[in-house]
Image (tube, rainbow, N blue to C red; front, side):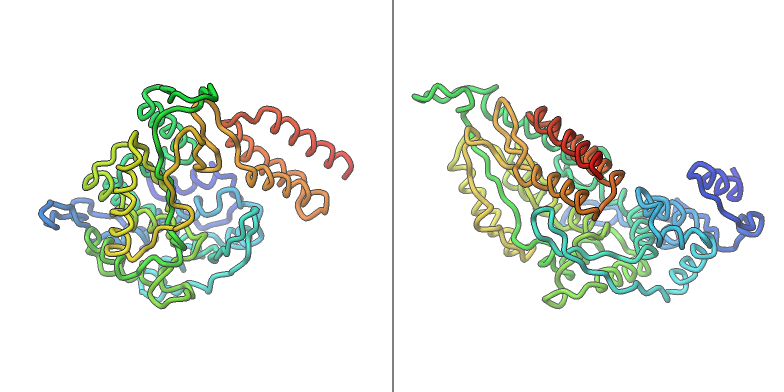
Length: 402
């Protein structure tokens, strides 16, 4: 398939009404062909043979990859003004972006910062649409390189993973640890009083405390391409953190990806050094299940020391606890008991707040319905039939009044 025909088809498939000189674009000197045989070599690191990658920058900045990145960046945002504006002169914009990257003159725009309350208050940093295309282009190329080294039970921001899959894995682990729900003798005759414990932990101010030097060292173990390393450093530096050389903006695709690279060191420590069998991580929120509380206490201490020394991170003192499985474990939006799940109150409140926004005409009905469908798809994994039904009734009532 020729480049001209291929890109034409891509536009048709995505319902783009574009005017472009296809012949000129198809023969553009900016179309890159990558010699895949020259993309990697083997190196030794700490006694293990590791594949390293060179000459990948041309693949990152190729028009084909930038176009694929643009499609990902516009997903669910095709009606936004900034997307419509970019699409009016799409291929010139992509070609200009390619030139900036090729000539090493690319410079991202300052991040737009805003407060998000859902209901937890968070500071979100929003990148310019063009910069988001660059983020996707980078992750398209180096994402698969690193993903091969990630452990199976790392579930955030990975194809085929996600919160629902992580919860299913948690259910599997709790069955194993409790020996299929073996009941501890108790006077309450509670069939949720199963044996086993969970170390539930997260990292204090994780995104604000990631050390750039450590992160770059981890990336450069695999990526030996100088221009790619420069691009990554440019992206990292486009954030006004409280401490120089630390922190990543919450909201960037690259931050989510780099978070997995950084904490992959923790994953390997827990799985291969501590040999914890029942471990799950979702970003900086992780759990370890075990039948013995004392073993979890020992591991908690060892994990805290590892994070301090190797990654310059700190376990959250209030949110890192060892909890009996019988009490229910708060993990990924649910309180997980052996026989059932409860949706956390803040997730219910989040949906109710959206309905209030519709009442105040801060959002439209279409946006609210889209939010509800996403919320409902997740909430259905808990015992929430009545809650979901009542929530939908409220939405209908509010929309009818409007």
